[in-house]
Amino acid sequence: MPEASNPIGLFDSGVGGLTVAHALGSLLPDEQLCYYGDTAHLPYGDKSRETIIRYSTGIADFLMDKGCKVILIACNSASANAFLEVKEHVGDRAVVLNVVDPIVEHVTTLSDVKNIGVIGTKATIESRSYQAALGQRTPNLLVSALATPLFVPMIEEGFVFDDISNAIIRSYLSRQELNGIDSLILGCTHYPIIRNQISRFYNFEVSVLDSARIVAEYVRNYLGENNLLASKRNGENSFFVSDHTPSFEIIANMFFNEKIRLEKHSIW
Image (cartoon, rainbow, N blue to C red; front, side):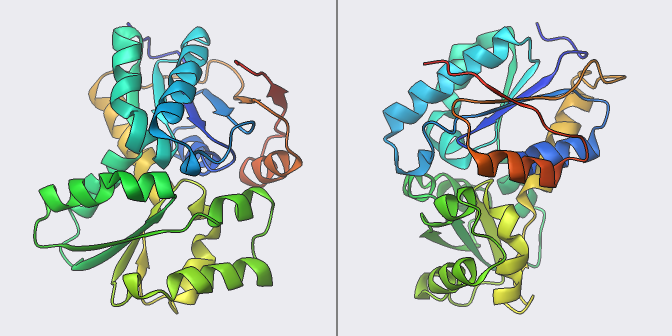
C-alpha cells in the first residue's frame, strides 16, 4: 500500500504535464514530485488507443519502481484512452488518477455555464470522454468539441506568445463548432501554456478554465481524504524524459523556481 511520504508520480507525452506539476508544487509544497515526459513518442494525440495503453502502462511501471504513492496520468489523451487499463495494471500498489474526472466534476459545480466548448487532441476528442461524462452529469449542458492537433507540436517546438501561435489559435477557435460558447475546457495539459492567448482571442468574454489548477486541487483533496498528504518534502523533485528535447528544459525552467535537471531514461 502507498505511504504518505512517497512521491507523487505524473506523466505526459511531453511538456504539457508540467502545467499540472507546477500547480501541484504551488499547492502542495511538501510533496515530492516524480515526472516522466515521454518525449520520444510525443504527441500521444495521434496514436492508436492500443499504443497509448502500452506507453502508459510502461511508464506506470517506471513510476512504481520509483516508489510513487500516486500515478497521475497528466495527459488527456492517455487519461481518455488508458485510465482503466493503467488502474487495473497498477492494482493496489499505487493510487491512479486522471485529469478528465477532476475537470468534469468541477464543471458540474458551475451553475452559470450553459454552453461549454472542449478542445484537445484527436485522441481525446474522438474518445468522447468529456462529451459523455459531461452529458451524463449535466444533461442540460450544451457541449461542443473540437480537435486542435497542431497545438501540441506548436507548444513543444516553443511557438508560444508569437504571431505563429496566434495565427494557429485564431484559425482553430474561429471555427463554427465553438460558436456561442460561454466557457472552454482546455482538454490537454499542454494548453494552459497558451491559456492567456486563448483568453485574449475571446476578449476575455469566455471563461477559459484553469485545468491544471483544477486537477491539482482535486489531487490535494483526494490525498487529504485518504490520509496520504506528506508532512514534509522527502527529497528533490525529479524529472525524467525518454528523449532529450531543448524545449522541454526551457519550459520546465519557466515553471519552476529551482533549476531543473533532466535525466534521460528510456524504458523501451
